[in-house]
Amino acid sequence: MTRKPDFPIRIFYDGSCIVCASEIEHYLRQNHCGKLVAVDIASPEFKSEPFHIPLEKFMYELHVIDSTGTVYKGVEAFWAIWQAFPTSTVYGIMGVIVTAPILNLLARLFYKGFARIRPFLPKRHDCSTGTCRIDKK
Image (cartoon, rainbow, N blue to C red; front, side, top):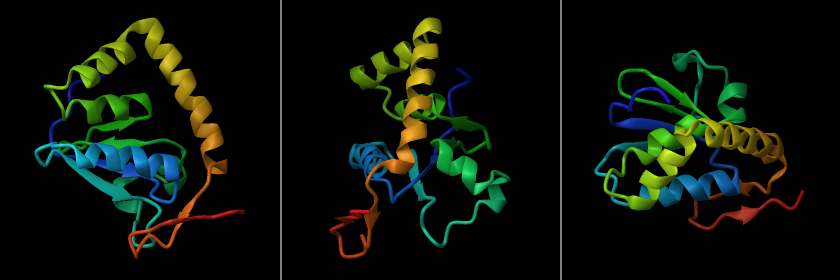
């Protein structure tokens, strides 16, 4: 893994993906002391140009950018998020697991597989009322 992130970090996630949004909302509900800022890349207001990363790359895998501009992608993005919870035993163990050489390779392969099927997962729409409905397409 790269160096620990400088907080706060911005988490670029697909808010229209039920799994993705649920995962990020899980982290945001915890006491992260303002270290996490969520950016919904599915929002019509989101523009990828200022980050010099094409929207397709943002959509393909989770991205985290720390306050110095360091970019973490995929498994490393989750590792960076977990660093916001230094007293968490669970996130600490998960961080050690994904940094172990062979387990890191397995985690990357698993994430790559998830990234390939993610576009086919159910989508959330019209969440402005606080209740999202699942697109049945």
